[in-house]
Image (cartoon, rainbow, N blue to C red; front, top):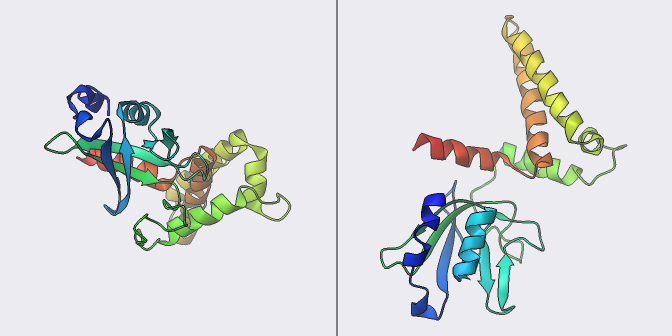
Length: 204
């Protein structure tokens, strides 16, 4: 995105009165999530913050998607079209995109969530739960240092089991590590899709 910021001055904001349409696409599934409008300030804020920010025509101000719901759109890439008067923003959604609760503003399903996505959803829901009723909630209540420590402990246990020949123990330790890793990601306000997006970028 640093390279993109160098071309902001080449965009044709004047054609539509200072605003250009920005189509937001899921970076992982390629599903179109929503359409918004950006002025130059909104685009710069999107680039600087890493979260999709629009200019709200109804509020007459910059509006960061998710500022109320917490369902931010984390930017992976931004491209302009051939005429330099429209943008394609590839992003990772942190929850439903539409205010109605739909995955997209076009009322489409953004891919059927697999088990890991459902597990991440459960982990998010436990974050605000009672520590006395849930191991995950209790882990969140102990703070980031304890969560990170658990990831380290599970990683060591997995390494130990990797040196032996007990497949069941190895796989169970791998599952423990993955679970605590997902908890850590959530504690850092991130998700597995954020990590996948980085891996996809590296693969290009």
